[in-house]
Length: 244
Image (cartoon, rainbow, N blue to C red; front, side, top):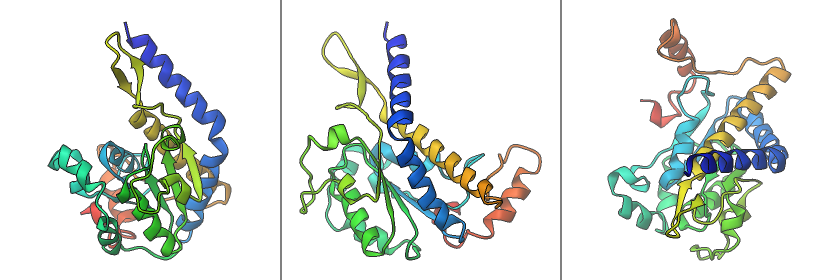
């Protein structure tokens, strides 16, 4: 009953992103590329289910090597889902995390938060700005603009972004309303992953436009994959904590 509705809603959201966010995705990709071509990294920070967007861009076949995901277990559900929600609202946590990352001035940050109202993602953006790091935000402006920030600044995450990519996710995340009034068919992870891959594709296109070969992972399950990956990882393994 709901299958076709869900499929069509997701397709509509992808088309909406392609139509309305194309220039923002390209602008974000250019910012990231300008850092990567000089040997810099893209740092990605997300909380809750959004952390899957960081994983989507990290250490996978066909993915760019110069990606540093900031994967903090206490902000994910597997070490306590209810507790992770509380940590996401904890002032001061982002500064502790930020100070533990090897960040060069000017390296871009991608921060993903569907609502964009919680303290930790906002504070991470503030820390990055103080380091003069460009900030790309993936969020739902439709949701964020209707909610009050939990940060003392009263600003939402998108207000700190140099480039804002709107995922156009509806309030509540679900795209289907059941007969009982519940919303199901969560869409933010699917659309976030699509945007992440769009960014990666645009970054690679920039490398190729300028005649530069980007460092891209091969599948470890293909002939020569392990050897290829081991060679390129030597360049960045000291800076990407989640690699080892």
